[in-house]
Amino acid sequence: MEPAPGQPGLESRTPLSGCSRNSPLGPRPGKQPSLPPPSLGSGEVSEEEPGVGGRTQLGGTRKTPSLPAYETPGPCGTPPGAGLAWGPCGPTRPSPRPLGRPVSVPQATKPKPKPGGSASRGAPRNSRMNPEEEEEEEEREPEKGARPFAGRLQDSRSLDGLSGACGGGAAPLGGPEQGAGGGRRATISSALELEGTVSRHGDLTHFVANNLQLKIRLSGNPQPQPPPSARPAPVPTPSIPPIDPEVLRDLERLSRELGARVERLLRGLGGAVQELTALSVGCIQTYRDAVDSLGEAVDMSIKGMYTLLARCEELERALQPVQGLARQVRDIRRTLEVLEALCK
Amino acid sequence: MEEAEMQLKGKKVTDKFTESVYVLANEPSVALYRLQEHVRRSLPELAQHKSDMQNWEEQSQGAIYTVEYACSAVKNLMDSNVHFRSIEGLLKQAISIKDQLNTSQGRSPSAPKPPSLA
Image 1 (cartoon, rainbow over the protein chains, first blue to last red):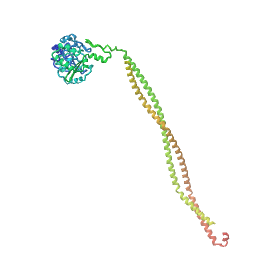
Image 2 (cartoon, chains in turn red, purple):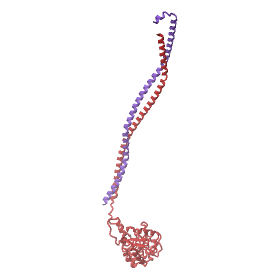
Image 3 (cartoon, rainbow over the protein chains, first blue to last red):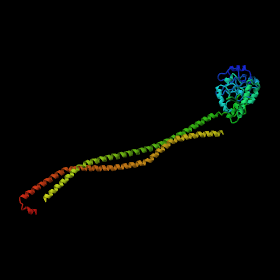
Image 4 (tube, helix red, strand yellow):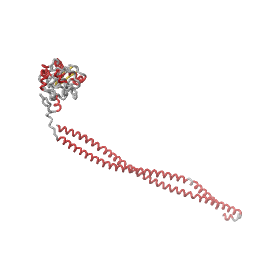
């Protein structure tokens, strides 16, 4: 995110033309690292923040009476340089290149029409993104050429202060912009205005947070920190207690112990389930034996039934000649009666 | 506050784990219980059926033997056919001889016959 090599040159070319955004430089390709404030006199547009997705708007020469806490002094940002660069605009703080944090410019609202990307950003902005979000910044590229870079000078002042600070040194372009911005601001909700600078350009709404670093800290930290004041280098939040090196070891030990307990538990469970299964296996085997014997009994019964049937059939067949025998016996009896009659 | 939060998180984790362990251990247990429950309920009926079958088997075996004996008896009975034939033959011979005797006695002395007849 360092300023492009060309930037310094540009900056030098465009002295503190107030907050004029329009920079003689042509549009910048791709992401532009935020130019160091000092070198910005003309300031290129602040670098884009790919991660943030917002583009830093390096408004012309923005005076940043107090740099946001998150701002880190960049190679280009040098207080003295900044002061020099901002001279006309007033005291300028070194605007180190923030981590891609865009520099919010009160008059960041570009007069120039923004490209589609910025328009898309304008839409969400219209929804009043929370101040804790990255400061919305207009795209730099399109306006880069038009505006001098003032991005670094992230000030936590309200628009009034900014305009007041930059008013004197504001470029001619900045003047009308300010007026227009002021007029537009009137339409913006007061809540946002308290947190930053809001300006509207047609469909686009620009919002520049006053103290982004403070907001970030506040969001993550229950103890709000005093707003950074002229703190060029980002200071680690003092509310975070010093990390205990034993934590890792304790974690490791505890997790190992936990794993051992869980393993024991599972083994015990497995053993119990195995016992249950063995018992059930015995029970089911008994059932199987019972069913087998029942099947055998039924088979035997059926076999006996069939045997009985066969025997009965055989008996029936054997009983048929008995009729003949009976006839014979009747004949013999008659003959005997005849003989008896003859003998008498 | 952080302590409570940590406790809450730990409790949530342990609750989830306990639930999963509960389900893990409960499914086979319930399944095995149902199995043995079914076995327990159906075994006495099976035993009853088996005993019934065995009784019937015994009875049928008795009947079979009876029929077997009857069949053998009838077969042996058929052996008397020869004897009956011979008996009938002999009876007819006896009748014929008696007829002849009667005829011969009637022709020869008719007077002595009547006292014998009386």
